[in-house]
Every structure is written in structure tokens, then in C-alpha cells.
Length: 390
Image (cartoon, rainbow, N blue to C red; front, top):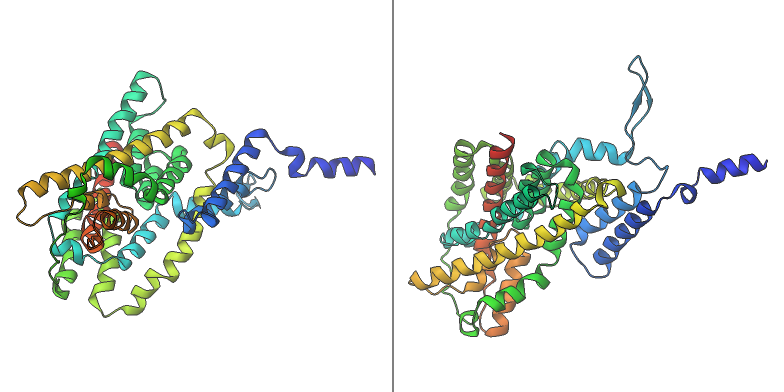
């Protein structure tokens, strides 16, 4: 009887729990707390946090691979998170579906009304390439064990685009996926804390008070033609970026064409919500103690913050430069929205602008570079995949 009780105790998670697993369970619970209490990107931090808790419970087997006998028959099935990760994240399926849903929710109108904002979205991607260079130098100097593929995957964090970061990391650095995903979504959630100090440091009160002229009305024909043209051009010039931008533009086309409202509604709501749940659980499965608790993770978090900060600063500085050459005034704050955190970065630009001038409404102006940033980060991802993986 005592031996049976002892065996039962040995099978418990408490007996098998290691220090690293306990730490990662606490990290998962912290993500859950930030999602619920602080409202930091709750749609993803909540399932990521729960996924981290589940994968670190010893003996539960949430990430266990299926076992087969010599004849190829399954002896025991794999765990839930094993199938979610390998079926949806490793294949790149979930990020692409998320991109389609985001496209269905996005209005290209502000960007089409002011095409110059494409330059702001492009400038904000400078943080990606600057961080790639920094990560390569850290790897070359022996400070960090980063390969070129690792550096490329880490740099994408600077675009503040979670699905793009996951898509690139799953192909170039799957072992770093957990840290990269958490960094990308954490910095997206912390946009209201990270960006304002940078915005105030790089602009004067007079620049933050600049009122921009009202945008022109964009026709339905323009909104329909644009995603089709972008898809074809990107697919021809940079095929590696076609999956991301193709799904993004397909979702937007469903929104704008007006003949598939049911499909557009599904992409914007039910489908993207279901996939978001599985995406979060799949990312959380990579937050096991052996994958996450190391010096590389701290390096990734630090480099991600640098990338995001450089991208924000580059967008602002480009807007200041354009303002000197533009006939119509450009508020440099909208340059900070060139990162891909839609629509949070645009809202932050609008908020900081209102602090300087109560009559200064920049939201729609900032949505232009915000949407351009999504396109820019997808193109940057395609360049990385083509250069590194090719």
C-alpha cells in the first residue's frame, strides 16, 4: 500500500517539477496577469501565457510527440500543443490566416489618400535591418551565439508585427520562436509606453502641434485595384513575400469589393478569433524551460526593444525631413506610426498630438503610415527569407 502511494506521489507534477519549469510557469502566469489586469494585448498574451503554463507542467505531455511501433502503428498520440504547433505554426498556416483577417479589417484609404506615407512606413523598417546587423555583430564577436538566420528572425521584431515575426522565425529560427513571439507581442502591447518618450525627444512642441490638411476621399475603384496590383507586383519582384502580402491583400479585397460580405465578416471575426486562440497556445508551447531560460532569450528581448525604438525614431526623422520639402505640413508624430502595430501606433500618435494641440486630430493621417508599415514589414520579411533561406 505504501509503495503504491509512493508511486502515486512520484507521478505527480509536484514531485517531477524542476526549477526551470517552475520559473516558466510563473512567467506564463505573469503574461496572464498582464493580459487580464493591464490589458496588454490580451487576445494573444492570454493564450500564450496559458500555453506556457501547460507545456511546463511535468508529465502532462502537452508537447509530447506521437510514438509509433516498429510496424508504424501509433502507440500513443501526441499532445495537444504538439499538433497545434506543427500543424499551424511550423507550417506558417496560422500567421497567414491572421494576416488575411487583418487585411479584412484594414482600410487602405488613408494611405491611398496620401501616398507619401508609404515612405514613412518604409523608413520605420530601418529598425529591422539595423538590428540584424547588430545581431550579426554580436554573433561574430562571440558575445551571443546568433547565426545570420537567427539575426534575421530577431530583426523582424522591429516591425512590431507579431504574425510576420512568427512566420519568419518558424522558417529561419524555430528554436527561438518562443522568445521572438513574446518579444514581438510584448512590444506591440507596450507601444503606449515605449513610443511617447521617443516621440517627445525627437520633436519640438511646435512640430507636435502641426495640423494636417484633411485627406481626400478615396474611390471604391482605387480601393479594389490597389490590393490586386500590390499582390501581383510583390509576387513578381519578391516571391518570398507573396504569402504574407498576398493573404493580407486578399483579405482587404474581400472587404472592399462588396460582393463577399459574409466571407469578409468571417475573416474579420470568427476565423481570426479561432486561429488567434490556437496561435497563442502554439507559441506558448515554445516557452518551455529548456528553450526559454538562457542568455540568448535576454539578448533577443534587448535587441527587440532596440529594433522597435530605432524603427520608431526612423519614422519620425523621415517625417521631419519630408515636412521640410512638402507643400502641405506633415506632423512628424505620424512617422512613429510607421511600425506595424495596427492601430495602436496610430492611436498613440493621435494622443500625443492632442496633448500638444487640442484641435489636432491625427488618427486618420497616422493610419496611412501604419498600414504602410504592415506592407513594409512583410516586404522586409520577404527580403530576409529570400536572402538567408535562399
